[in-house]
Length: 485
Ligand code: NDP
Image 1 (cartoon, helix red, strand yellow):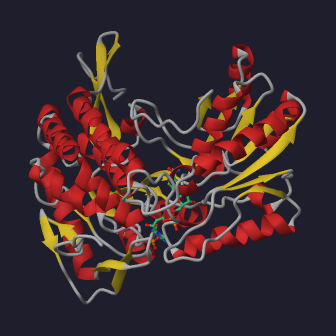
Image 2: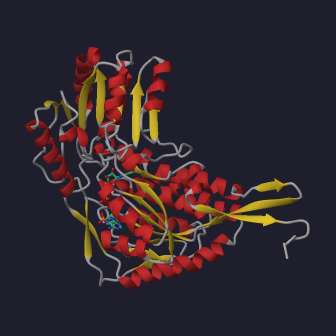
Image 3: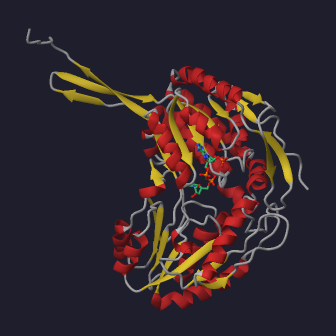
């Protein structure tokens, strides 16, 4: 079916592939077929030690270079990624199951965007001059040191680049642990950064499950941890980082609201709801999975949605005509199937999908529930799959109150033609990343992240620099020191 995607070795440490078969075997499964396409090994303590020691050594040298020099390496890596977009996209598709139609435009390319953006910014990272009358102060923007990145399985290339690019631009080194479900793509990013001129040890990839991540987080040489994952994992990692007073970025889950008012452009709103629920088979943290539709247009919205779902093409994700792939793993397929059953049992009305096709691989149909109420588990808990909950509302105050009645706060969207209402509603929604008449856009120029339980810190844009650097303040006295004795 496929050319071999078996990597040269499981880990990429100190500028080269590294193997240690003493680590537990991790089969890499193509989600569309269930076939094992590669095997890697979890990092042993020796591999983790080599990665951390290598990163610490590389960081000192890297931080001593000029920002322009660092930026050149990142931008070169971006160019290589773009030149190899098709190969990298194919690997992403095999690793995650996401359709090639998506990965060709959303994964390696957004990783390249991050490397290009932060590469351009690397030479501009400066401190400040602070005049103080006769005296003055200045600040130096310093790197944090060795950073650890831990990724989820939905966007393995993008997550690796979104963390590496600002970290390296600021003069840090990184040890990155991909999700055990999708270990292949980050290795390619390490290879490409090395080819682009990154010194050995600057960006290392080590494989393994949670315990490898935990070991990295606990290591005293590590200054910062950036996690993309679920809230329960975030809680554990944040607590562990607190022991060492480490910096953290937490990009966690959500149960985001998408508010559709009765004056919205119906097709745009339906399109936004489709993108915000079914892209990447619903495995997107910022998805607008609680779709609040104003009562007057509820039936028209559902009718148009069901009509447009006829355009779903489920099939071999390597076929570019396919626009809907499988879940990333059997475990996630089973979680989603349980939520669909719970939705039916709780009395939600199934208006589309709901099936778990009996075929090899980890498939779930795009599913829409209507008549969902706030108390149902499908409206409260993150499903992380293609399950859209449609809820009705009467007026703006009610919609905002119900939208905010969640512990999460990653994203929110509003569809309306009334511009005053759009901005008024967005201002009241408790979410870190919001959309007006759109959903799920994530350009590198715009900060991305959550509030409440959805996380702390921001990825992308200049905001990310604050999370990968620290300021040293220097007071300079120009006159004599007048001590009392
Ligand atoms: P998990 O939280 O299960 O895992 C995230 C990563 O953390 C994995 O690499 C995992 O390893 C690792 N990990 C698990 N336990 C520990 C630990 N104790 N210490 C250190 N590392 C640990 O998330 P999923 O991979 O299941 O991803 C889905 C979740 O990610 C969803 O909740 C989703 O909302 C969220 N997400 C958030 C995004 C955001 O930007 N806000 C973007 C994408 C996803 P392993 O799994 O290999 O065992």
